[in-house]
Image (cartoon, rainbow, N blue to C red; front, side, top):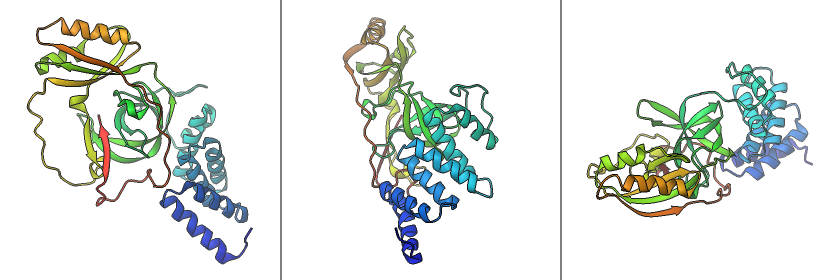
Length: 319
């Protein structure tokens, strides 16, 4: 164990640089080493908790952040939010409520999971990977229920409950106003609905409207992916000012791709049968089951940070 001030300064600089570079294992080891020499430093405890958060190690993250709160002379919103995220990941609801109360955020009283309405937002699923964005309804400050039918490759489903970060990394227009985009951290509860990929021939927009408007038992949600999925470059994904050539999507495309969330294939088959029989020219051309495991978290880049405005790499798929 080194005690040379110049060595500790080097470790300090390396630790912060490792966070910026997405090297979480290195950063975690360095902050732990720094804390062996400076156990009363709240900033090192906070950074240890931050690293553990992005490793989804909720026990360590909560311990670090609670220690940072105890050692800090002034109130820190960031420490409390990260502690609340970790406690939420652990399902420690008494601690969660205490932390939100300290932040003057009102949540329903009780002993179990918080179930409230914190409005519509967007969550970027698997932000360390392809980064598909979906609309969600927030049930507490850091948990949300998915409202879209995600692409199967995301490993997610309509109705999943996900834990998301507290800092927004952009905005999206929800049809009425701009809403925040948050990075997902972890899926907490999988949905009961399966994802079915459906291919149909719809002569007109009215035909598609009729299909999406059918309500049948066992159906969660039907979404016209041909209309809703857009591929965004990284700048657009993070709301960085910049322009693209306009795409002409005014001409109707009869061949439509749908994502349907349902409890069983029978529910999907009944939905499509009723729709196809309702008007000549409607055809069902295929039904596939789309189920994939959650992709593993990838380290090596700081996926939790919004990129610079001049960074124009491949970005999100949005619904």
